[in-house]
Length: 266
Ligand SMILES: [Cu+2]
Image (cartoon, rainbow, N blue to C red; front, top):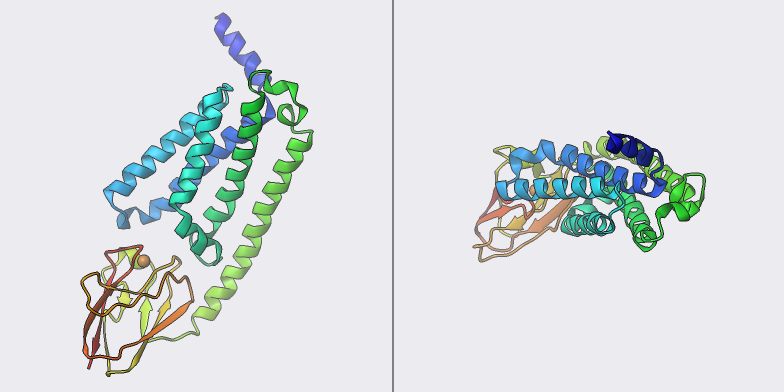
């Protein structure tokens, strides 16, 4: 029973820094789950396993961070940084477009990761002497608390501005017309590029507009003798390509390889 009493005492005395790190890690784990759940139908089993591994690693690191284990400080930061680098392509396209479904995730998870790494480095360096010895790690009424408030303020601000921007982008994008539309929820439907087959004369230009809330590409099929690649483009964005020779050209999306379309030239 002595152990229970001890636990209650140490919980009350836990330094502010470990709450910031553990809270941040739990936030990223939950946000990752919420962000990827609607995409589950479109992603493969391998990705699902990877996702589960990351969520478990984040939660384990959070738990042991609360116990002020030095290795947990390292584990949490490294897991977060590896996760960010794996998603770097999505992060760039999501952050550039508030109408992208990943915008909220990127704009909240990245600043939170910054806090995790910052407090983990400081926590690791001060773990031997004890985190309570440094005021900025021990209590929110310190420079450490100010940094957290500033970052949370930045996140809330960018999400509010993003919501306003997303409304404007979505309203404007309905006015944009193109030959082929990338439809809403494209990664999960049977006809992602509509019309799936588009006919154009030799030398003609085909345009695509993205009406989905995630980035996609228009990229020639791997076995195609004629290569073209739009690169990733997000909600409301337009891409076009001219076809100088006759033929049947299949294309797909580099992010969602099951998305297929075809251009018939001639
Ligand atoms: Cu795609």
